[in-house]
Length: 99
Image (cartoon, rainbow, N blue to C red; front, side, top):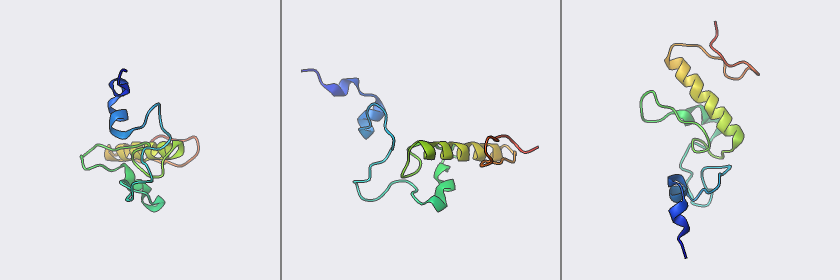
């Protein structure tokens, strides 16, 4: 019998998330490894590397589609701010630098 691990992607091998997943982190292992307070969600995109942000299901817990969108907008806003642009992130249908 052929091993199924031969066909797994590196992420599947490391995380056991196969065929896509709505959340990145499990809630069964005790301590949550990422920021998990809505008051601190803006910090969830920060990484230890300068000029590098993170977004998506691995950056905040609990995650999912809406958190992925929110952290994506936060990361984009952080990048634009680093470039000297002022950004409004939450105005519906409006995501561009303020003139």
